[in-house]
Length: 116
Image (tube, rainbow, N blue to C red; front, side):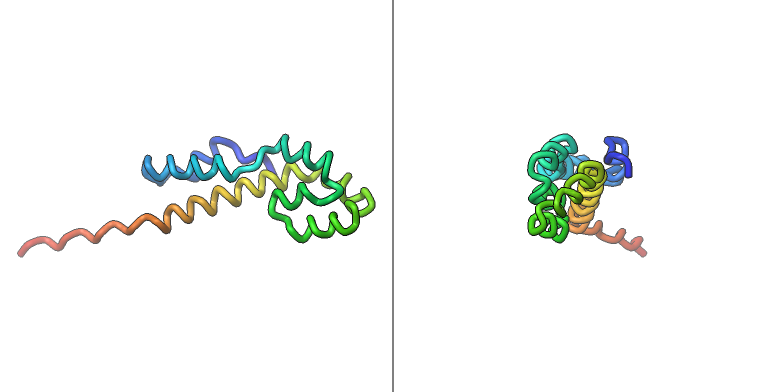
């Protein structure tokens, strides 16, 4: 899947108030993963599964840890796949943050009935 772009992020927060958008931006900035950094981690420590742990794939991380990257095969495959996993992680986190912000916001009171 393609990179989680700024335009996609703006479409996601379109219905939020300005204060909610600021809250989203601060939370997302602290939780998103950088594609290049994760690739470097995958290159250096991928055989131990550290890259998969960082993008939330705990099962694959444990498998790579116990098999030393599937004897190098999983490590090599992940060098090509990790970019997409980082994008999926960032997209998933953005959706979680938006849904949490929407749940925290109290519902608007119903309009008052017209006076008779």
